[in-house]
Image (cartoon, rainbow, N blue to C red; front, side, top):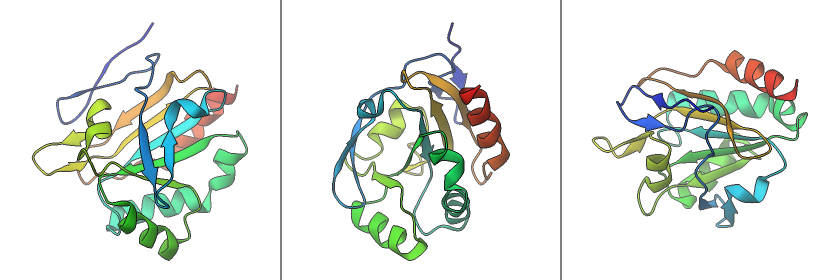
Length: 164
C-alpha cells in the first residue's frame, strides 16, 4: 500500500510504496544515467537547489565523507539539481565528489517536477530525498522546507531499515 507525500510546496511527491518515476539525465561527465538501470540495488535520490551553495555543499560533503554508509549496502547515490553538467563537473572536482551529480537542466526541472520538488517560482529543486529499494519502490521520502538542511541521521535509519 502506498501513501502520497504532500510536501512544503503543496505538491505531491511519490510516497512510500510507490514506484519511483524513471528518468534519464546526464551526469557531470555528460554520460547518460537512467534510474531503472539500477534495479536490483537500492538508490538514494538527493534533489538539491544549486551547486556551490552553502547548505547544498555541506549536505553533499556529508554524503562524500560517509559514502561507506551507502556503498556498504551497494546503494547508488544520485544527486540531482537544475545546474548544467559543466557547473556540476567543476563542483564535483572542487569538492571531491565521486558519486553522480545529475543535471536536470533541460527541460528545466523536468525530473524534479516528476518528484514534486521543483519550485516553479524560483526555478530550482528543493531538498527532496527519496531512498528506493532494489525493486524501484520508494522506501523513504522526505521533502524539506526552503532553507532547511536534511537530517543525515535519517539516511542512516532509513538505510538500516532497508537492509533489515
